[in-house]
Image (cartoon, rainbow over all chains, first blue to last red; front, side, top):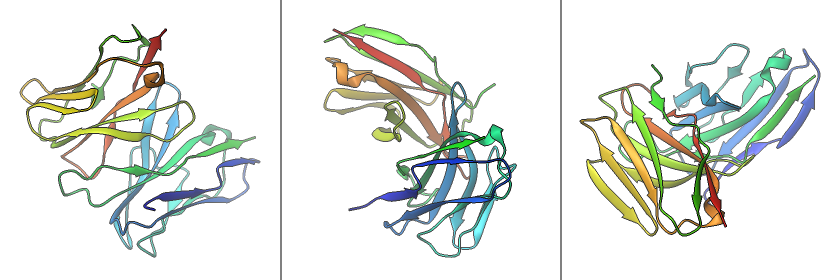
Length: 115
Length: 110
Protein backbone atom coordinates (compact mmCIF):
# COMPACT_ATOMS: atom_id res chain seq x y z
CA UNK A 1 0.00 0.00 0.00
CA UNK A 2 1.32 3.43 -0.98
CA UNK A 3 1.76 5.50 2.14
CA UNK A 4 3.65 8.08 4.11
CA UNK A 5 4.41 6.94 7.65
CA UNK A 6 5.20 9.29 10.50
CA UNK A 7 6.29 8.38 14.00
CA UNK A 8 5.42 9.02 16.70
CA UNK A 9 1.76 10.03 16.39
CA UNK A 10 1.74 11.77 19.74
CA UNK A 11 4.63 13.18 21.73
CA UNK A 12 4.87 15.21 24.91
CA UNK A 13 8.33 16.46 25.74
CA UNK A 14 10.08 19.06 27.84
CA UNK A 15 11.73 22.25 26.70
CA UNK A 16 15.26 21.70 25.41
CA UNK A 17 15.15 17.93 25.02
CA UNK A 18 16.19 17.01 21.49
CA UNK A 19 13.68 14.98 19.51
CA UNK A 20 13.28 13.49 16.06
CA UNK A 21 10.06 12.83 14.18
CA UNK A 22 10.54 10.24 11.48
CA UNK A 23 8.91 10.19 8.06
CA UNK A 24 9.11 7.44 5.48
CA UNK A 25 7.42 6.99 2.10
CA UNK A 26 7.27 3.90 -0.10
CA UNK A 27 6.30 5.55 -3.39
CA UNK A 28 9.79 6.46 -4.64
CA UNK A 29 8.81 10.14 -4.52
CA UNK A 30 11.49 12.72 -5.14
CA UNK A 31 9.92 15.56 -3.20
CA UNK A 32 9.27 15.49 0.54
CA UNK A 33 8.31 18.24 2.91
CA UNK A 34 7.32 19.03 6.47
CA UNK A 35 4.43 21.22 7.52
CA UNK A 36 3.13 22.45 10.81
CA UNK A 37 -0.51 23.27 11.29
CA UNK A 38 -1.77 25.75 13.85
CA UNK A 39 -5.29 27.09 14.39
CA UNK A 40 -6.00 30.06 12.13
CA UNK A 41 -2.65 29.77 10.38
CA UNK A 42 -3.23 26.75 8.19
CA UNK A 43 -0.46 24.52 6.90
CA UNK A 44 2.92 26.20 6.81
CA UNK A 45 5.93 24.60 5.22
CA UNK A 46 8.96 24.09 7.46
CA UNK A 47 11.49 22.44 5.15
CA UNK A 48 11.40 20.62 1.88
CA UNK A 49 13.65 18.32 -0.10
CA UNK A 50 13.76 18.07 -3.88
CA UNK A 51 15.79 14.85 -3.76
CA UNK A 52 18.47 13.01 -1.81
CA UNK A 53 20.93 15.40 -0.15
CA UNK A 54 18.96 18.43 -1.40
CA UNK A 55 17.03 20.32 1.27
CA UNK A 56 15.86 23.89 1.62
CA UNK A 57 13.99 26.13 4.00
CA UNK A 58 10.29 26.65 3.78
CA UNK A 59 8.31 29.46 5.37
CA UNK A 60 8.98 28.68 9.04
CA UNK A 61 12.34 26.86 9.38
CA UNK A 62 13.60 28.41 12.63
CA UNK A 63 14.23 25.82 15.32
CA UNK A 64 14.10 22.84 12.99
CA UNK A 65 16.56 20.71 11.06
CA UNK A 66 16.10 18.04 8.43
CA UNK A 67 18.19 15.57 6.50
CA UNK A 68 17.63 13.49 3.37
CA UNK A 69 20.24 10.74 3.25
CA UNK A 70 17.92 8.26 1.58
CA UNK A 71 15.10 8.87 -0.87
CA UNK A 72 12.43 7.31 1.33
CA UNK A 73 13.24 9.03 4.66
CA UNK A 74 13.00 12.63 5.71
CA UNK A 75 13.30 13.08 9.48
CA UNK A 76 12.45 16.32 11.26
CA UNK A 77 14.79 17.25 14.11
CA UNK A 78 14.10 19.68 16.92
CA UNK A 79 17.47 20.27 18.59
CA UNK A 80 16.07 22.31 21.48
CA UNK A 81 12.28 22.29 21.44
CA UNK A 82 10.38 25.25 22.86
CA UNK A 83 6.70 25.61 23.77
CA UNK A 84 6.00 27.65 20.61
CA UNK A 85 6.79 24.51 18.63
CA UNK A 86 3.74 22.81 20.08
CA UNK A 87 1.76 21.99 16.97
CA UNK A 88 0.40 19.34 14.64
CA UNK A 89 3.08 18.26 12.19
CA UNK A 90 2.61 16.62 8.82
CA UNK A 91 5.09 15.03 6.50
CA UNK A 92 4.16 14.94 2.82
CA UNK A 93 5.64 13.51 -0.35
CA UNK A 94 5.08 14.18 -4.03
CA UNK A 95 6.39 12.57 -7.19
CA UNK A 96 8.03 15.86 -8.14
CA UNK A 97 7.34 19.55 -7.81
CA UNK A 98 8.14 20.08 -11.46
CA UNK A 99 5.41 18.01 -13.08
CA UNK A 100 1.75 18.80 -13.36
CA UNK A 101 -0.40 16.68 -11.16
CA UNK A 102 2.13 16.22 -8.43
CA UNK A 103 -0.31 16.15 -5.59
CA UNK A 104 1.01 15.63 -2.09
CA UNK A 105 0.39 12.53 -0.02
CA UNK A 106 0.33 13.17 3.70
CA UNK A 107 1.38 11.18 6.70
CA UNK A 108 -0.98 10.63 9.63
CA UNK A 109 0.37 13.60 11.57
CA UNK A 110 2.34 14.00 14.78
CA UNK A 111 0.82 15.99 17.60
CA UNK A 112 3.71 17.49 19.54
CA UNK A 113 3.38 19.20 22.90
CA UNK A 114 6.39 20.94 24.43
CA UNK A 115 6.03 21.82 28.10
CA UNK B 1 -1.60 39.74 0.48
CA UNK B 2 -1.73 36.04 1.26
CA UNK B 3 -0.63 33.76 -1.54
CA UNK B 4 -3.73 31.59 -1.29
CA UNK B 5 -6.87 33.00 0.33
CA UNK B 6 -9.98 31.27 1.54
CA UNK B 7 -12.90 32.39 3.66
CA UNK B 8 -12.49 30.59 6.98
CA UNK B 9 -16.22 30.09 7.47
CA UNK B 10 -17.91 28.24 8.90
CA UNK B 11 -20.06 27.72 5.85
CA UNK B 12 -23.31 26.08 6.87
CA UNK B 13 -25.53 24.34 4.33
CA UNK B 14 -28.52 22.06 4.80
CA UNK B 15 -28.25 18.40 3.89
CA UNK B 16 -28.87 17.89 0.18
CA UNK B 17 -27.89 21.42 -0.81
CA UNK B 18 -24.96 22.57 -2.92
CA UNK B 19 -21.93 23.82 -1.01
CA UNK B 20 -19.74 26.33 -2.83
CA UNK B 21 -16.18 26.90 -1.63
CA UNK B 22 -13.93 29.56 -3.11
CA UNK B 23 -10.22 30.23 -3.25
CA UNK B 24 -8.11 32.99 -4.80
CA UNK B 25 -4.38 32.94 -5.43
CA UNK B 26 -1.83 35.64 -6.11
CA UNK B 27 0.87 33.94 -8.21
CA UNK B 28 -0.06 34.20 -11.88
CA UNK B 29 2.35 31.42 -12.87
CA UNK B 30 0.53 28.87 -10.70
CA UNK B 31 -0.08 25.70 -12.66
CA UNK B 32 -1.67 23.03 -10.49
CA UNK B 33 -4.61 23.44 -8.16
CA UNK B 34 -5.88 21.05 -5.54
CA UNK B 35 -8.68 20.70 -3.05
CA UNK B 36 -7.99 18.71 0.10
CA UNK B 37 -10.49 17.68 2.74
CA UNK B 38 -9.36 17.53 6.34
CA UNK B 39 -11.31 16.17 9.25
CA UNK B 40 -10.40 17.52 12.66
CA UNK B 41 -7.06 16.14 13.84
CA UNK B 42 -6.57 14.07 10.69
CA UNK B 43 -4.31 14.46 7.71
CA UNK B 44 -5.47 16.22 4.54
CA UNK B 45 -6.75 13.98 1.79
CA UNK B 46 -6.87 14.93 -1.85
CA UNK B 47 -10.37 15.11 -3.33
CA UNK B 48 -9.90 17.10 -6.55
CA UNK B 49 -7.15 18.40 -8.79
CA UNK B 50 -7.49 20.76 -11.76
CA UNK B 51 -4.91 22.14 -14.15
CA UNK B 52 -6.73 23.94 -16.96
CA UNK B 53 -9.49 26.52 -17.14
CA UNK B 54 -13.03 25.28 -16.89
CA UNK B 55 -14.86 22.65 -14.88
CA UNK B 56 -13.82 19.21 -13.77
CA UNK B 57 -16.39 16.86 -12.30
CA UNK B 58 -15.87 13.80 -10.14
CA UNK B 59 -19.00 12.33 -8.60
CA UNK B 60 -20.61 14.94 -6.36
CA UNK B 61 -17.60 17.25 -6.63
CA UNK B 62 -16.90 19.84 -9.30
CA UNK B 63 -13.77 21.96 -9.38
CA UNK B 64 -13.78 25.19 -11.37
CA UNK B 65 -10.68 27.10 -12.44
CA UNK B 66 -10.43 30.60 -13.87
CA UNK B 67 -6.79 31.56 -14.34
CA UNK B 68 -7.58 35.02 -15.69
CA UNK B 69 -9.38 35.89 -12.48
CA UNK B 70 -7.03 33.76 -10.36
CA UNK B 71 -9.68 31.80 -8.55
CA UNK B 72 -10.56 28.19 -8.10
CA UNK B 73 -13.75 26.87 -6.56
CA UNK B 74 -15.20 23.59 -5.36
CA UNK B 75 -18.87 22.68 -5.59
CA UNK B 76 -20.26 19.82 -3.55
CA UNK B 77 -23.66 18.66 -4.71
CA UNK B 78 -26.14 16.82 -2.50
CA UNK B 79 -24.13 17.72 0.59
CA UNK B 80 -24.04 15.07 3.31
CA UNK B 81 -23.22 15.37 7.01
CA UNK B 82 -20.08 13.35 6.29
CA UNK B 83 -18.89 16.25 4.09
CA UNK B 84 -18.55 18.38 7.22
CA UNK B 85 -14.83 19.12 7.35
CA UNK B 86 -12.30 21.79 6.55
CA UNK B 87 -11.50 22.18 2.86
CA UNK B 88 -8.02 23.31 1.93
CA UNK B 89 -7.15 24.92 -1.37
CA UNK B 90 -3.56 24.33 -2.50
CA UNK B 91 -1.57 25.72 -5.40
CA UNK B 92 1.77 24.88 -7.06
CA UNK B 93 3.64 26.74 -9.75
CA UNK B 94 6.34 29.30 -9.23
CA UNK B 95 8.68 28.16 -6.48
CA UNK B 96 9.38 24.76 -4.99
CA UNK B 97 6.35 24.32 -2.84
CA UNK B 98 2.70 23.53 -2.50
CA UNK B 99 1.05 26.56 -0.91
CA UNK B 100 -2.09 26.08 1.14
CA UNK B 101 -4.88 28.39 2.08
CA UNK B 102 -6.01 28.41 5.70
CA UNK B 103 -9.10 26.40 4.83
CA UNK B 104 -12.86 26.79 4.88
CA UNK B 105 -14.85 24.96 7.50
CA UNK B 106 -17.98 23.38 6.05
CA UNK B 107 -20.90 22.28 8.22
CA UNK B 108 -23.68 20.26 6.67
CA UNK B 109 -26.73 20.40 8.88
CA UNK B 110 -29.47 17.79 9.11
